[in-house]
Image 1 (cartoon, rainbow, N blue to C red):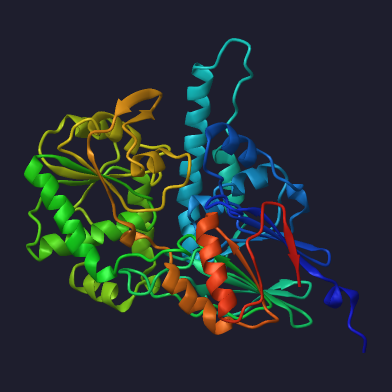
Image 2 (image 1 turned 180 degrees about the vertical axis):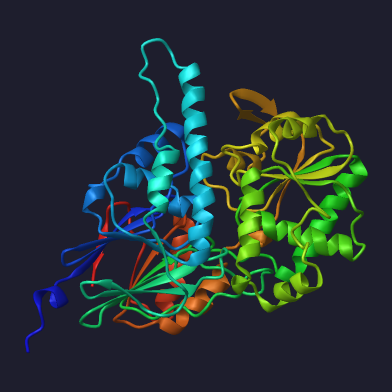
Length: 469
């Protein structure tokens, strides 16, 4: 029997997001008549560019048959409601924990869209067109009706000769590598964001599934993180130094993953007597909601965290941390003078309550801004990392006099050695490897080494570039 045209036709992947950048993950897979989108993330950068890129898709959303989602960070899932708003009606496949997380993430994103549009409209010049939110909560509700939870590991039939398998990526609660299999034997693996072995809370990443085409992130492809065993000690030193100055520690943190990780470490340090018990505030309703989702999915935890939770069910709870919901209470934190730790979103300082805390506190040299995650170019977080003498916050120039400390060891992304260890066993001259979700210097460093280790067809595609298998 002759193979069908569907089985032998080229399968193409076009990279529409996170290409030559670390944001806006979105890759279009075309196999015969089927069009599948891997991720549909928000692009973060200059406000005007981000608005235009997020609002407009480079393809008709109604043409997409399904979305396969790697995890719930906003740069991977944040534009799903806009896809639905503009005509997409297919299923959105993800793990059970990811489904629960995107429900709160997308609702929060819709709220930010509406608040940003309202703010810009109040300050727009006469004659300028009114700004509309990219999507609203009604679009989020329609999106959640399309979400389909698929557990880790078994193959799930997508129909028309296509299957998906989710494999634990160890990056975030529910995060997954995506393995797509096609009739005729061809396959694609997308790492999503690959995690690190040994970090607390989550299980270590599973091995990367082999495939004809590997699409890998490379956020830290050119450098390694400090050892995990150093994290607690380094955090202790930073907090203790700030306490001795009589200052506050401000932590811009992603509501998913980083917030829970730093609370875990602070819990351990205080329980061991290595830090005094001081006020710790998680000033983010989203973080509080996300922490509740963490409690709902112990199946994602590693053995150590499961044991800690057995001994102390309040590991993430109110005995140690004050979760701030009310806006007035959030504002009141800036009037407090005693040393404290304030953890607030967003992780790149582009929106949310962290902006108000930074505006009121970074001119005081007693305070510390602790950066615990990657900061994309053109974000306020990147300008803080670069220690600009003056930054603009909420439209107002502010002098940076607080200490800025960067601790990349908290990153949930694989470092250079982690990526090499994950990908080297898959080296094969016949296998294609494409790097996304990384800046050029990080991708180029990784590509050079992996070519030495046996990969031949390795590339770092630009936006709109395609590859076929």
